[in-house]
Length: 69
Image 1: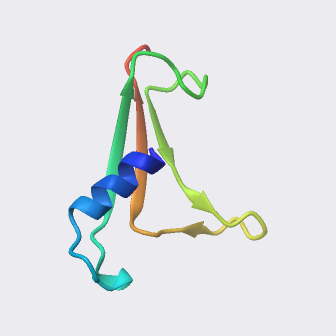
Image 2: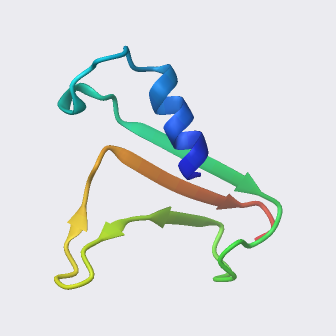
């Protein structure tokens, strides 16, 4: 996910673009197995500050789809 997200961001951005102007990116990983073993068909990944529990939005979204459930 990290690699694909970085490549996608690089491909849709012009060289020298300011960070605040980067487009938001959503990566969807579709698998035929339950990658997190939680018996859920969808997993939305959030970035969370460990110390406070605050969710941080950085313009990158990850969704995992489990076709096995």
